[in-house]
View (cartoon, helix red, strand yellow):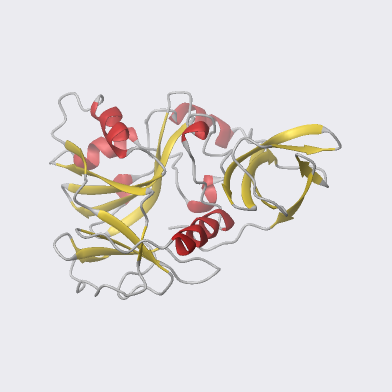
Length: 284
């Protein structure tokens, strides 16, 4: 990547719920192409995309960003998942591929509510030595991410605001209880361009493609707001009939998987739920 590395910002704060996995070697891109749900081979050096790893039944194990640093180097930026366990899971499928998979304890992820210095959209900036910058902005405003060798200060308020921004823009934050439960379509991941139905085989691809081409997606994400905090697993109902469940929450803001056509009003645990439109701009 030829861009100058952006300077550190005093407004940066740690994203301790994000980790980094590196894939290096001559087969790094091919391995990721065969295992993950998006078209990694379509990336050029210095680009990134939303992506994920599925079970053979097409359920999302983890969502992450894939960064192509060069032809033999990828980073996975993984929220909400034990990166050591995920790296070990991927390692089981290496077989004879020339790729080294490692959870990177030496790399730290930080965020900032401000425009990137040099990154834009799916284009990265910086380098491995000085830090890599990503554009994480959406319709609600600019955000930037840095991956580098030193941690940023902690800021609980900014971290909570970051999570809420993710949910409002339709990026599910999947804790362990929600792993391996939902298909990409049920998580509305087409909004983020996070999966491919054209690239060929990968775990769960048959389920994803069949759902897409037969038009069988009946459920998707809904953005909800309540007067009290919500939690993953909370049942969402209409007139006492359960319609779906909360899958991600940030205080009183939540994402739920519900029928694409569902009645109003909605309630959970006796609380009235306000339905809000998902915001755009986070697709890459």
